[in-house]
Image (cartoon, rainbow, N blue to C red; front, side):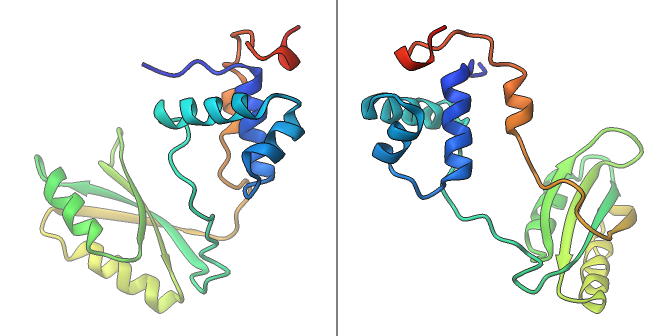
Length: 166
């Protein structure tokens, strides 16, 4: 069941985005709520799976992997599990999604060079389960990954924390 977010949950997620190294005390000061409120909210967001981890955001481009593409794969009927294993074995596959439409899987791939990208594409096409692939090169990033604007559209529940009560 999805976790219902309120204004304080969103403010906490924004504060965590803007101040990723902030501790509970600093977050409580930023949000004008008790430290225990911050601790319990963060714990609840983690338990609900809304907050999935605390790892650093890594720029593939800054790390030397500035060539990226999206690759759609049409796969053989019933081969999804084997394709998953094959994709996991290819280091250049950064993400993969099962999709609807003319393709079955959409992959985001990255490489250090065009030659490296070609190697990733060749690795993808070596799979006996891949019937056809189509790739589209990424020229630049227009919008970085973001979730808070979408989450804000669902925050209808009134917050329980005193500082956030209307």
